Image (cartoon, rainbow, N blue to C red; front, side, top):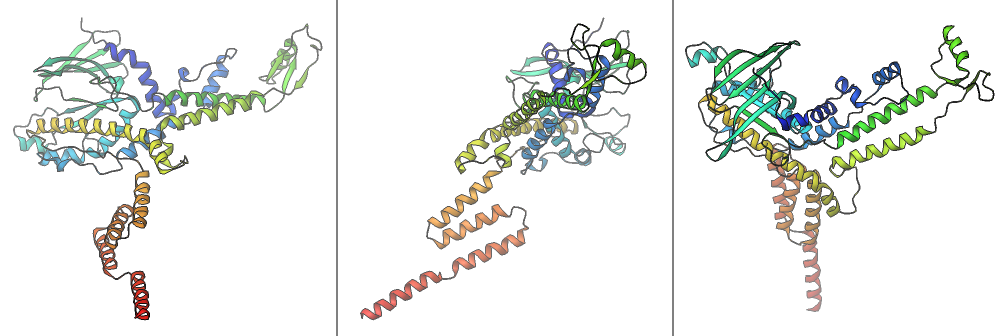
Length: 470
C-alpha cells in the first residue's frame, strides 16, 4: 500500500510554520481558536462573539514589507542573464509563472514569502506537448515556468551523496487543484515524475507519469536565513516577533471585552430573579447572581462594573509593541531612535544590515540555481553572476555626507574640495539624469579653477604691507 508520510523534520514544524504564515497573512487566516484562548468561565456563544470581533494588528506583515524593501532597494546585477536568450527565455522573463507575473516580480514576492516562514519551495517545470518541433512548441506557448510551494506543501524529500555532493533524489509536493475531496501529490525523481491522487477513505492511485528531461529534480528551496545549514528549512524573520504580535492581539481582545462589558451597569441580585427577567424577554447578559445567603440578596439593583484591569492591560500592550519595535531592529534604520553620535547610530543599524546581507547572499544562491535550471530546460547554460547589494543602511548616506562636509572644512585644497563636492552631488542626487550630472560636475570644476577671492585678498594685503615696508 502506497503512503506518503510527511518528513519527520517537516512534521515537527507544521503547527509553527502555519502560525508564522498566518501571522504574516493576517485577516481571516488569523481568526482561529488556537490564536485567541477562551476565558475560564466563558460560554461558547460569548467566545465565538469575541473571536469574531477580535482585531489583529498585523505588525509582522509591515516588518516583512520593510525588510523586503531594504533588500531590493539597490541595484541587483544578473550579468544581463549571460548565456540565456531566445523567445522562450523572453517569455519566461515577462511571465515566469504563466499567470502574468514577471520573473523579477516573482523573485521579490518569493523573498517576502520566505521571510515569513523561513523558506519557500520553487519548481521549474515545462508542460508536456505533442508538437513535433521546437518552433511548434514555442508557437503553442509550451515553455518552462515557475511554481511556488509554501512550506506546508512540501511533504517529503530524500537526499543522497552523489559524486561527493548532497543531491535531491526524491521530492513529494502537494498540488493545489481546487478539489476539496481529492488530495493530489506530485512525486519527483531525477529521471521521472508521477502524479498521485487520493479520494476520501480510498487508496492512493497514480494517475499520470512522465520523464524528467533534465535528469535533476528541478526544485530550489529559497532559504531566508540559514538554520543549522539545513538544505531546505530556513529561519523566519518573524520567528519571535509573531509571538509578541499574538500577545498584542490578545490584549486588544481583552481590552475590547472589558470596555464592552463595563459600558453599562450590571444587574445584581438573586439568580431566580435574574432568570425570571430573562424569561420575560429582557437581556441579562451583564448580570451578577448573588447567593441567597448574602446580605441583601433579595434586592435587585444595578451596580457599577469593576474595570481596574484595563489600564494595566493597555500598559502591557504598549510594552509588547515596544518589544516588537526593538526586536525588528528597524528603529535606527527608520530614524525613530535618537543616537548620541554617528558611531552609535551605525552600531544600532549593524544587526539589521548583517541580517539583510545574509538574506541577500541566500537570494543570490537561489536565483543562480533557478537560472541554471531554466538554462537546462532551454538547452543553454547560465554563465552570469547574480549579485545583490551588501550595504542597506539608510543612514550610510547621511554619514557619508557628514564625513564629506567635515573633511571639506578640514583640508585646505581647492581640488580636494571639488572632488568632495562631486561625491556629495552623486550621493545626494542618485536619480538625476546623466546630462544634468555632467553640468553639475562641469560647474564644480569651473568653480575650482577660479581664483579664491580670499586668497587674492590675502595676497593683496601682503603686497600692500610689502610696499609700505619698502
